[in-house]
Every structure is written in C-alpha cells, then in structure tokens.
Length: 275
Image (tube, rainbow, N blue to C red; front, side, top):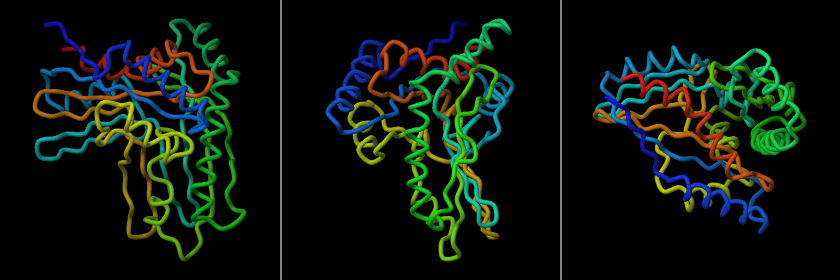
C-alpha cells in the first residue's frame, strides 16, 4: 500500500507565505522568521515502532517518546534548547542546513558550502545575538559568551550549522526564570522574537502544538536539560503529524527554502513511508 503524505500548504501557497515574510523583512518588522509546513500521513504500525524506526534512520542526542492518553509524541531532535549544570547555562541553536551527499566527495562539498555560505552564517549569527540577549536577562552581567560559533554537526540525512552560547546564573535566579527568559527558542521563531511569532501565527495555517516547544527535565538539584521539539511525530489514532521549517531572511530564495523543509523532513518521511 502506497503511503500518501499530505501537507497543510500546497507548494504555491508556501512560496507565497515565504514572499510575504520577505515583505515583512523589507518593511522593517523583522530580520528573520522561521516558517514551517505540517505534513500528515496514515500509519499502519504502532507509535513506538515508528519511534524506533525514526531513531534508526535519524539517531539524535535529544530523542524522547511520550505516551499521553490519545496522543503520542515521538521525537528525534538534534537540537538542545537549554542545559544548566551547576551555575552555568547553555543554549545551542541550529541555524543552517544542507542535505547529506550521495558520495563522500559530494558530502564534503555540501558541508563546506554550508560552512562558507554568507546567508547561513548571517542567519546563525542573528540568532546567536538574540540568544545572547535572552540569556543576558537572567545571567550575571558580562558572563554571557560564545565558546563555539558556526560549527558543523553531521546527522544521517543532513548537516547543521550550530553555535553555543553560555552564561553564569546568579543565585537569585532559578530554572523557571531561565526558561521564561528564553522560551520559545530563537532558532525556531525569529528576530525580533515576539514580532516573528505574530507573523508565524498569521502565515502558518495550523497551530504548532508541541512542535518547536521543548521536552526535557528540570530536577530538584537545579540541573536541567531541554530539547527543541523538531524532527518529531505527533501521533493521534492512526495518523502521524510532523513539521519542518526554515529561517527566512532578506535574501532567501523561496524555492530553496521550500526544498530545505523537505530535506529536514526526509528522515520522518522515510520513517512513515516504510509501511
């Protein structure tokens, strides 16, 4: 039986939404916004089998399986939202993606292209700036720094461009203060964050639900580790829903941005397509 995957956008409408986002950028509302499309498909296997399949296709460090009554969340996320260890907090936004190559040479070329792409570097640095601001609201003055800027991480289906921002948390601030200052993550909203979220609300036809939220733990010892909910299935009855998006900036090419959402959704599409 052929697996049919539907999107909540047809391609034409998605390209229109990207163009509208670029209009907002030129009007001065925002510098960057993360737009996404939602896919859905029928599944013939159990949610846990689908999760195991996704993990096999796309092993990722921040995976999670949450079984709620009537709804299952199966996540294989590569992105850390917030981690606190002792009095140090860090966030690791992903901004910039390329598909993996079919040969080692093509692989290397795509990784190099991502690392040297002015557009992807600018996109990443904008979000680093935003996250420095967010952490600056809850960290000791002068403690926020960027130990890792623009490094390549490789996953089975994509390359990502990642940066790390760290800061020192003063004794009068707890994990809830940190989450309040930083949530939702900048990489999946945009900059400035609140206006970008308003534009997402206007341009995306479906509410995001758990997508681009956070899953993780806050413990009684003051530690926490949270992911960003991307590369994730939300499963209800026998249907799986999943979203993929990308950062739109002033010089974005709508066709390339549309393709990027398909590259990011590749592992999930593969998982549901295996019957």
